[in-house]
Amino acid sequence: MCFLKGDCLLCVSTTLLTRYVDECAQGTDDCHPDAICQNIPKLYKCTCKLGYSGEGKTCEDIDECDNDFNGGCVHECFNILGNYRCTCYDGFMLAHDGHNCLDTDECMFNNGGCQHLCFNTLGSYECRCKAGFFLSDNQHTCIHHSEDGMNCMNKDHGCAHICREAPKGGVACECRPGFELARNQRDCILTCNHGNGGCQHTCEDADDGPICGCHPKYTVHSDGKTCLEKEEAVAEISESNATAGGDVDKRVKRRLIMETCAVNNGGCDRTCKDTSTGVHCSCPVGFTLQFDGKTCKEMHNPLAHGPCCTSPRYGACECEVSLLCF
Image (cartoon, rainbow, N blue to C red):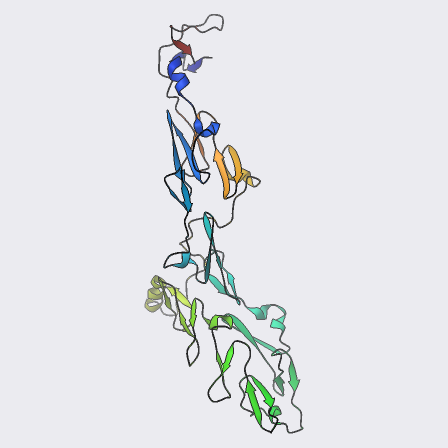
């Protein structure tokens, strides 16, 4: 066949033509399944995908969670092949950035199950009763004060959470799950087992209650529970009434949802193939796969440099000996 460039039909060497093979398009390359094959004249190049390390012919998964920054997750980080996923403790939900954890306001849904009043706290919530009522053992329903003179019916019984009548008279105080009875046997101290102790990031139990901490690059807010990025904390000091930063974490650099060829052709320009770790894009002959692993770019024909074919009068091309009309 002839290759028309302007008004010139070009001839190429048959030896050079047989040497041009796109191993990536033909699938004859030896790149690792988790690598991208990029065709170049006479050669091809293997590059491991994001989330993998290696020289291209062998690629190993990178454990993004195994570092001082916990993969950027403020609570828990779980490594998966070629990627990772952040999760949050009970009482929190994952923010849109996939890294931060936001407090869940349990009171917004069905009043938190509280019969009277619901008060949201960081990582948890608590029910309270109106005047003339006290909270039952289930910590949700409210019981009207009786007039029988029982100690626990008296609002001055002193128990912070649960009051029970002692067999020999008097009262015995108990605490809700996640709390421990203080030394005075009346007050209840929050522990890290309940709503992460009210802490946004890390929690450590102490005699006087939980001590909250933050991951590297963060600092504890003045409330002692929430965490701010250090640059945001500086801004808060310099600007009065400044609030903590938004929900979007600037460190997000990759998608957390696995791609599939069934959705938008996996983002591939041309051919898409599903693999165990996501999609694998490839390009037809004459195109090369770019470093984004998705886009195909047409190659400048490295063979289209030679003498012109003789001008065909009846649609036929003629070349010199050992040359093909391309």
